[in-house]
Length: 299
Image (cartoon, rainbow, N blue to C red; front, side, top):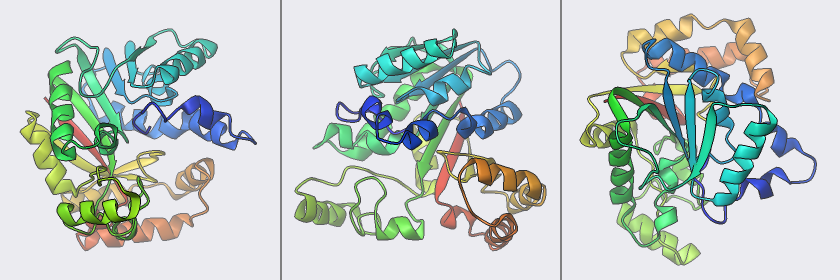
């Protein structure tokens, strides 16, 4: 989900004519891959309490509720909180609750969560705090994640890759050309020249963001390439080691991938997709040429 702002109302988005956007946003199948990934990666005793930050309409929160005993969804926009709660009630999901709050100051007790999820949120927090240093705000948010996760707990982060070629040409958040390719001060100058606003939507390569997460206090950070992306993850390929990435790709069931791509609304040829992933992993280019990252971090 995108981080919420007062202008980012999911109710407005869900009411778009035709209903296609509503069907996509509320599709539980979008995050079946995330749940499968978490069940494979987390210990069996890690499924008590989960937190979904920037929950929007609550689709990730409701998905987490299938695996966790209690889920809290937090969003800055009170209308999103109300919408997410009403949809959860409509689907009779009883073990999820929604609260108003920001990623920098969560309405959650310290050390109370087995898992905190920042899915498509960290890149937006600078935009919600125009004029402040985006990196400093993001570090504050990561510190807040460390606060609410209990010892031995986990943080999951889904975010775009700054160095993905198409992203270098045009930022996917503010729509400006070249801002991710330029040093931050020059990106700021270009953004002000075009949009009259500073550039605040910072994303990173996996090495830089890994250092930021470790700097927040987390002890272990694993990086994955989620396919088809963090908004509709079908499978997760480890960036490193290369041999593990190749084993994961070799284990992909092509017929299952075809069905998953169909469900995701993708027309990609599954055999071509697998061959492309294999080449990138073999050449050690997966971390550079993946569109998105998924970070799984242990406290």
